[in-house]
Amino acid sequence: MRKLIIDTDTGSDDAVALIMALKSTDVKVEAITTICGNVPLELATKNALMTIEVANAQKPPLYVGAAKPLMRDLVTAVNVHGEDGMGDCDLIHPTLLPETKHAVDAILDIIENNPGEIEIVTIGPVTNIALAILKAPETMKKVKHIYTMGTSGFGPGNTTPVAEFNVYVDAEAYRIMLNAGIPTTIIGFDVCLGEAALNKDDMDVLLLSGKKEAEFSVKCNRSLLEYNLQRSNEHIVDLPDAVAMGVVLWNEIVHEEKLCYCYVCTTEEAAYGQVIVNDGSKLAISDGFAGHTPNAKVCKTINNPLFKDKLIRLLVQ
Image 1 (cartoon, rainbow, N blue to C red):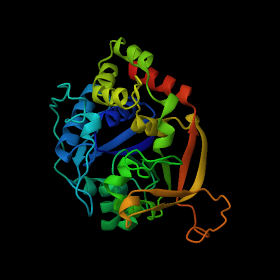
Image 2 (tube, helix red, strand yellow):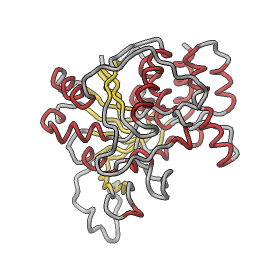
Image 3 (tube, one colour):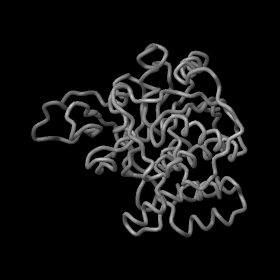
Image 4 (tube, helix red, strand yellow):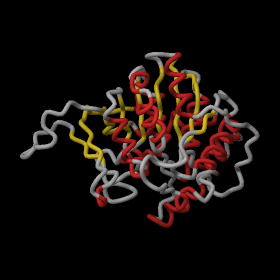
C-alpha cells in the first residue's frame, strides 16, 4: 500500500484534501505535519486535528512544524479562508492532541524507516520540507516522490500577478525543494479553477448527504464562497489542495503533464514567489534556461468531471 506524509497549513481547502486521503482505502497516511501559511501554526494544527476527527477514518499522528518561513515574515490568507482558516463557523473544537516530536524530525524518521516508500504531499508552504532537506539531505533522497500544490502552473498568480500563495509565503523553501533532486509533481493553481471548482449543485449534494465530513467540507469553506461571490459573483468554491490530492489518489484524472525546468524567483521583490516554468519549447533567446535538466513534472490539464465525480463519491461514502 502507498504511504503518504501530508504537510498542510490547514485552511478550508486543505481540510477537504485531508478528508479525501484519510477516507481513501488505497493509501496509508503515515503522518500529518503542520506548517504556517493560510493561518498561523497553532490554528493550522487545531484545524488539522479537527479534520482528522471529522473524517472518522484513518487517524495518523500529527506533528507540529515551523511557525515561520525560512527568511521572511509570515503572510496568511485569513482574508480568504476566515480568521480561523475554516470559515469562522465555530467548527473547530478538537479533542485530539499533536505528538511532541517536531514535524521535521518526524518526517526524517519516517523516511529512514521506510526508504524509497514515502510519498510526501505538500498542500501549503514547504518550509518543513526545506528544513528536512537542509538537516538531512541524504535521508530526503530516499523519498519516493513529492506531490506539491504550488506555483501558478502555466497561468497567472493568485497572490501577486505572477506568484501563487504557497510559494509566495516561502519561496526560498520552494527553491530548496525543487533543487533537491527528489522526483516531484507540481499541481499548479491554473488547473484548480473553472470546472474543477465546486458549484452550487455540488455543494447541495454534499450538504444533503447526511455525512458529517461532507457537510463539514462545505461549511468550512463558507468564507471562501463569500470571497468568490464578492470577487467574481460566482457561487463556487475552488479547492486547489483537493485537486492536488485528487492527482495523488487518482492518476487517471491527469490528462496532460510535462517534464519542466522550474526556476523559483527569490531576489527581485516584484517577482518574488514566481516560478518560471520552461516546458522545453524552443525559445528565441534561451539563455538561463537552455541545457537545464527538468526538475519537476507539471500538470497541464485534468479531467474535471471525473475529478469532481470521484471527490463527491468519496466524501459521501
